Length: 157
Image 1: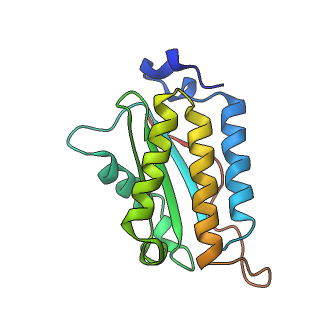
Image 2: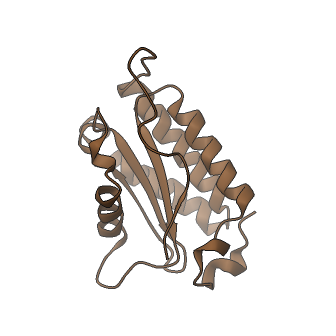
């Protein structure tokens, strides 16, 4: 379980337990099972100065080449724990399909869970919702689809 007392530590190793990371990886794998879409999660203690959560998510998205998926349908879930900030960044084609309102709803969903200290549950629910949206617009084709991006949780500083 994610220990809320760890929210103020600077080392990201303590932000998520091994079992929390495994739950998130399992959620990503389940969500990606029915779609060509790719989902990644990035967790860090705080946002570097002079950036907001969406700017940081965008930077991480491109730095990790998530924009290079075949269908341009990658999604990044970004959380800065100490700053209590989060964002979701969807690549061009998935964003065109779901629009800004979908991302806003997912951020609100996650924020609601975070306010109740249900951090991992909030991320899992959003991963599931994003997976359903990806499935609706980019269904899995076993003859051509492959896992293009790692499902492992990315940890920042």
